[in-house]
Image 1 (cartoon, rainbow, N blue to C red):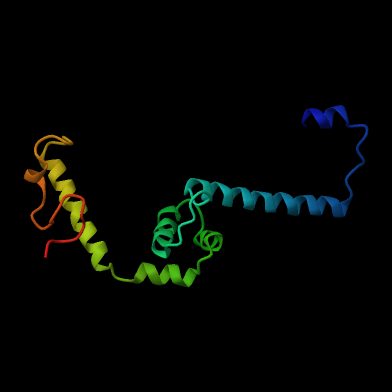
Image 2: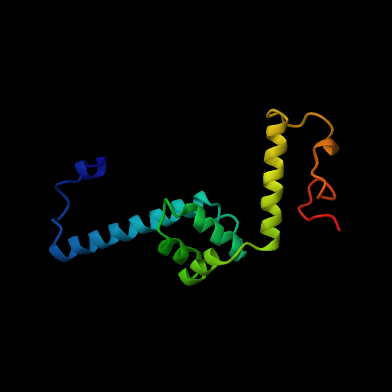
Length: 139
């Protein structure tokens, strides 16, 4: 009991059956909304609404251990069928290049004994990329 309930216990009327049912419904709704709020705050989607569907599908995939896919699709305004279709789709050429780049960076980092930022950059740059910071192969 909170302080208000203790101080005004004699003033309050007993809660009737229909009111108890309504209170339980509101408590369930409140719990659902609280879960949605926690999810949206953790993903920063309340502050920055990103319209890129790919990013939101990736977000759902990353958060599926903590929240149900059905709820996240509803919260983000996406269809479940679209999410599952996205999961089955082969990786795009850009995604494949980014994966290759990530593997190259990991190998370079491991090859430099875990040092970061030491030595000339051009010495460690994979030859298949034109400039540092670009994820497209040289043509």
